[in-house]
Image (cartoon, rainbow over all chains, first blue to last red; front, side, top):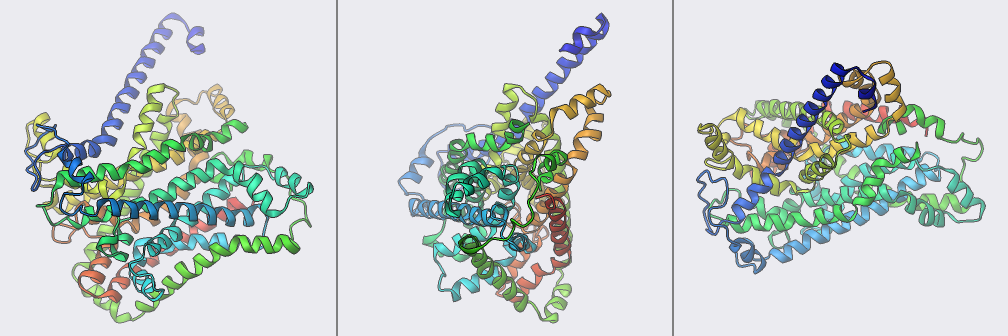
Length: 295
Length: 301
């Protein structure tokens, strides 16, 4: 703006023209991005609001011709085929998600506290080794996991899936916590130690409160990892113990499934992480803008 | 380490000098530190080292690999994996980098569109993939749109290898681009404003500012994210399994889904493990590169 004021008349007009063109361009881009992001969600509603149960007939509809909440009703009352255990499975998803989240946050933060704040010598060996977890992508280990969980006596046990999620979420959690932790000044720890605080007190009273934004990001990451998982839940759990994510894909071959109810179930399943992100948004924004505050 | 999230040069100035001799932990502190790392060490050995060793042991026979090469579906699968990872990672990362610049603009409606834009990251992968699958079915939403807007009949997306593979890549980008955009956004926010002010005085605006200021400062972060994302996409199972289902006739399978089919559909677990482990010669260098990158920037820590 200040630039414009110092420019001669025609240049100012050109500047204004360019400005409004950029403005229009970014408005277009924003609209395109919103459509791009929401298209599959819209499609979920399109199918879920269809009153017809059973085989879906696509007629190239762009909106639901006769919207009805029948699909949602069938999910809530567990009447729809394949969804007889919906709430039980929803509970399983929630149990796996929440416990994976808590364990990842606790284990990850303790490890990165000991290694980067308490400066445990040779501790970086462990945090570096953690990254080795990603040499083999999670899905590649499913066969050994299947065998090993059996030998640990954990077959068809929700804890086997939790163990897998924590295993694959923690390395990234440690990475993020160390990156963020390097922004938190060490003087605070040192001052507390001089005042006689124990290691546990420094962790609980100083490290955790100061790291809240990063911990929130890690928590969201871990929950989403568990919530997104399809493979581990599908392979390690038997049908009744399954999570909601799995029931969706199981019916891939069955076009005769009540797809309106299935999509209604998908919409319900999508909600908890959105709620978590909304609840923690303050911390997420804080973790993004921390450096800006410091400068 | 700070460099990883963007403007590194300032970090070393802020950090207090380390006092020599204060580094060794003694007595109860040492015991606490050990107790703190113990849970993760246990997880690492029980759920990473052991399964990894188990996998290597399952797939150690050379005959398995000979069998893989002889299998006609193996080499196309390798090609698919390379294409899926190559396009999936690079297109996604580049768009994420550009979009993070867009979301830096201070307009309320850009902030609002960011909230919508991160939605795909929060939506469960399996559900989103199934929705995409139905969207691309005959007479689904995409075909409906094509005929409403342009009056053309859309192709049968999952009947043609390249269309189906393209669909998988697009869905993957849809799902994961927001995550990396947010990471780059955080990186950009760490670039001090005065660097831009100085660049503006020197006449660097627009594209020149991006090429000469923003990108060099974000290059390290960009490389790290690309490496990490490559590791993750190679292991991506859900997208291919639920969008194209590997179809038509298994021509869009990637290593992760092929290994799954071998192990659980053909009851050849060892062959399945061998199929996925054959990606190790590519993955190990990536991890080594990633760790070295992290270490060089960690020297400061």
